[in-house]
Image (tube, rainbow, N blue to C red; front, side, top):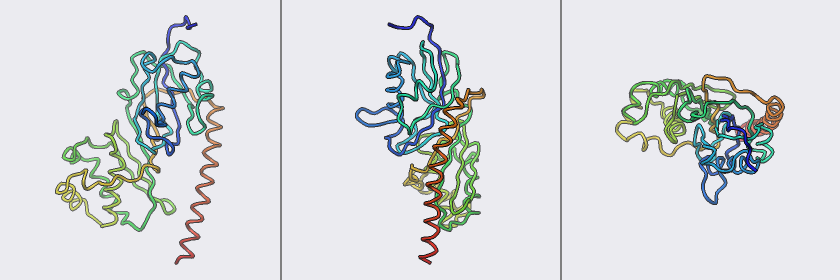
Length: 265
């Protein structure tokens, strides 16, 4: 029997480890983040179908890409809690915050800002060249490459790894990983911005940025809408604990790498 309550539209923040999935967009016969979320929403009786619930997402992340701040939206006449949704999700996908939004809310179109983090091993690239090259992608020269300037690109070094943080209202598909490839080339070949620009113009952006950097170390950190979300403290605490243990595992691998490099000379 259907609920007699009027439907409410919810925006929900989602964490996921994307390494075991074929991207976000549902694909028949393949495990995807979006497909898994829709199945969980249906299994929890929150929705009876994707179209009826007007299910939408902020970003269609590629295969292997993870997220902390992915945002989905859907209509439901049922009593919603993130725990109700999480009860039908695998451990590598967690809803952790929510907000009631207008019926017309579209999480993709109404995003004010998206922020991605990419992490790459540092292999002696010229750091200054990468920082200088990053400024190219916040300039109007990007129009010549086929996309809008980004709001911000930050490059930093931390304990043997390069952190790239990209901020913009929107990103075309695969752009972040392609820019990472360009910046790593700039560092490896010690390319000054003017030389890099000339190379990209001569070869074409897609060709020069090929292949895109691997997806496994890219994360959609945040999607900002200018309004607050209600954080489920219990779910958030469990998620922090889970991520802490995963970070501990990575710390072990980092120390193994350091020891190996010392032994290998």
